[in-house]
Amino acid sequence: MDKILIGDSLKLAKSALVSGSLVAIPTETVYGLAANAFDNLAVRKIYEAKNRPLSNPLIVHVADLEQAEVLVKNPPTIFYDLATKFWPGPLTILLPKQPIVPDLVTANSFNVALRVPNHPLTLELLRSIDFPLAAPSANPFGYVSPTNARHVYDFFGKKVNYILDGGCCTVGIESTIISISPENEIFLHRLGAISVEDLEKKIKTKIKMRDAKGETPGSRKSHYAPHKKLLIGDIETLIQSFQGEKIGVLAFDRAYDQVKPKLQYILSKKGCLHEAAQNLFSGLRYLDSLDIDFIIASYVPPTGVGLAINDKLMRASHIA
Ligand code: TXA
Ligand code: MG
Image (cartoon, rainbow, N blue to C red; front, side, top):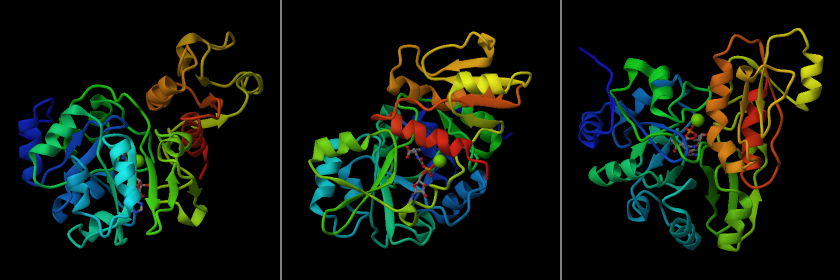
């Protein structure tokens, strides 16, 4: 009987991974849909389960810098500085790969994306196996990312062999992705949990922006999107112009009297951007489950992690 299993058993997670099955893993950012990165058959199952094009590569998760080092070719010196300062943590680093990393994982790119997730269960799991884990976010391609085990269960049901339940993700939005040139220049590929300000401050180096062509394959305009149409602007004005329509509100820090409380989701009552990031995907999922036609939202203050939240909101609202 292929009963779905959710639990915190590292033994079950490990045995499923060793036998080439998919396991959902908790990370501090969002849940990942993991497989043995060295096993092409297992990795193929990730693309199939997510309905993800083979042209969109997967992040490789490792336990520590030592495990990462063997997967990259001639790591520039700044890589060690970054890894020491930000790992474990929500920073993904793109570097030229060693041939040992399968082309299927990197979608034939010469670069591999590496990260050490900051979650105690997943770190213990990674230390207990002798292969890295390829893992994209555990959501169907293009939809809102999962921030608890239940979300993953709702998405994938029997397609995953085991869901390692590590509670709610503490950060709530995806890792920041950067690449490093051989000359130690750093380029931003995806806004994420670590702000550019923070990166620049800690490594005392300017981060360069990529043009649209340099964005990672997954940085398409339409992404992280609920099924309901998401409209962004001044909430009061939008409520006015949508009078008579069935709407829900994704608010930053306060409720709006004109709309029933249960049709509203407040990201952070105390106006904290980190709390807002943590609640963003749950809020979108909650509103998406209601009997409404439109979700109305506003951007959050554009500083620190607020920039990444706004980027996600913009992509979630894009009508393809
Ligand atoms: O926080 C995160 O990064 C989460 C957790 C599970 O680690 N993962 C995640 O994976 O967000 P995913 O697949 O949803 O997004 C990864 C992004 C995609 O846009 C993908 O195209 C890009 O990283 N990427 C992965 N490997 C790459 C590579 N070798 N070259 C360029 N882009 C790459
Ligand atoms: Mg994703």
